[in-house]
Every structure is written in C-alpha cells, then in structure tokens.
Length: 174
Image (cartoon, rainbow, N blue to C red; front, side, top):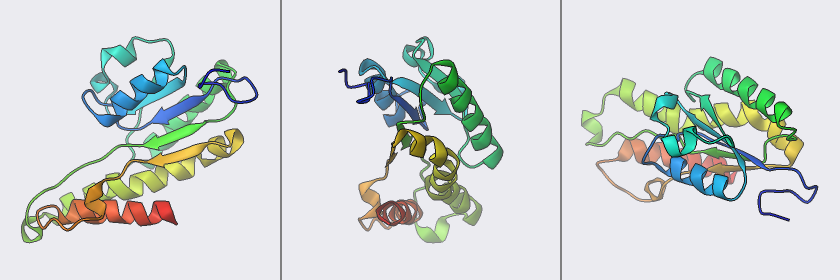
C-alpha cells in the first residue's frame, strides 16, 4: 500500500492554505504530490501558486482567503465537488499554513494591521477548520496548524505576530 492510500485502498487528499511560490505551503504541497496525494493547493491569488503545482493533474488550485467566510465556503464547495469527481471520501489532511507578519515595536503597530494579522493567523484557522470539519470527520482526517517558535518566545519587535501564534498554539493544544 502506498503512503497516499488509506487502509481501505482509497486515495488520500490534502488541502493546504497559503501555497504561494517560495513558501512552506508550496513546498509541502509538492512533497504530498510526490507521495501520491490529491492536493488542493490554495492561495488568495492562485496565480501565485508555482507552475510546478498548477500544471499537475493531481493538484486542484483553490482560491481561498481565510479571512472571508464566503471565500472559505466557496473553497469548501470546490473541494467537495472535486472529491466526488475523483471518488475520494472526505478530506484526509487540512494544513493551515496561511500567515501574515507584522514587525516593529508594539507602540508603532497600527491596530487595523494587527487585527488583519490576527484574522489570518488565528481566526482564519478557526474559520477554515470549522468549515472543513465534516470532510475531515468523514475521512477520519487530521488537522495540521503551522505555527511558529515565535508563539513561545519573547521578541519585542514581533509582539503582535508572537501573540497570534501563541493563540494558535493554545487553541491547537486545546
């Protein structure tokens, strides 16, 4: 049995948020494709997903902005219909990788930018997990939340970023 098949012999699938070229998401997507997964590679702008992924038949590009409930629901519909077309049962892995960073002294941070960062790094994960939970349950799948050591360390020039990752870490552990 290949690493991309479950014990029932069906093909495994994974949705990865934040698959822009040069990032962790795109690299992880390429690795999962090599392992035989059907990969849903997502980004706010799918033109930013590398051609090495976008040109493959085992990769479905999904426009997904984790800060928008409408976008998450639209992405869910794309994933559901693709899973049905390809005879896959549920979603095996959801990788929450989308992220945003703001750096500088906390006194200089714009509150609206800080809220936007929290909406991507924390609330976007919650929004996406809630939407895709039924597909994950159906496949007895797993959720992988990409965080950062910054959620555990004190960096005065990354306090807002650190706080968003600390919140993600605690929510993930809970």
